[in-house]
Amino acid sequence: MSTHIGAKPGEIAERVLMPGDPLRAKWIAETYLEGAQCYSTVRGMLGFTGRWNGVEVSIQGSGMGMPSASIYAHELINEYGVRSLIRVGSCGALTEDLQLRDVVAAIGSSTDSNMNRVRFDGLIDYAPVADFGLLRTSVEVAEQRGVTMRVGPVLAADAFYTDRPDLYDSLANYGVLAVEMESAALYTIAARFRARALTILTVSDHIRTGEKVTSQEREQTFSQMVEIALDTIIA
Ligand SMILES: O=P(O)(O)O[C@H]1O[C@H](CO)[C@@H](O)[C@H]1O
Ligand SMILES: O=c1cc[nH]c(=O)[nH]1
Image (tube, rainbow, N blue to C red):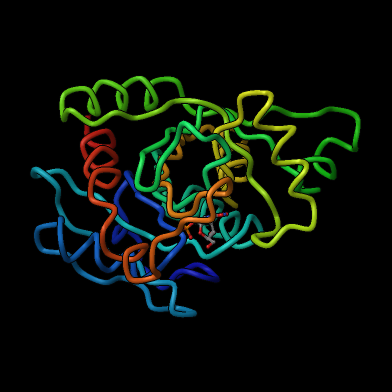
């Protein structure tokens, strides 16, 4: 066991999908994996291991926000030997040309989090980026599956409810597609410990139009994103 994950050594695969929502982790495991076994219920942050097309894959909930996601990424990589992590999350669209349920791959992640300012003494604006190999594979998989997946930069924000919507406008002017809350930390920790990471998102909220999907849909319906992530992680 690590501090926050209840798995025994060998119970977590080298390849992990990380949804923020632990019940999305359960849905993915029960819907897609053969022989899925739950290896952790610590803090209700469920983790499962099973097989996708014969290859062992784990699904680990990571919670909301960068402090929580950082804990799971750190322990998965450093205590369980995980080498590839794909976050499968929800996001808010910042640009009008995205619609609810569109799939977005985050090539890089701007952030308002202070974590990397502390890490680099405030001297460097570190640029957290996706693993190129995983990103390239995900684009190929999306094409093979006939899914239009937008690739571009996102914002990893500390706050879900913002007092500064004007900053969303500024970021959209610089091509930032969507806002979520974990990708910058995931990319940074993966880089630090030489693992591979990618974030794939489904638009659950539209910041421009106010449209949104239900919490049940966020938990159990983002199948295009999940299928792209599963095919990518075993490639
Ligand atoms: O749906 P998940 O993966 O949790 O991702 C998004 O949803 C949560 C906010 O509702 C944040 O964690 C954000 O990043
Ligand atoms: O961080 C997030 C995630 C989903 N939807 C949002 O609007 N923001």
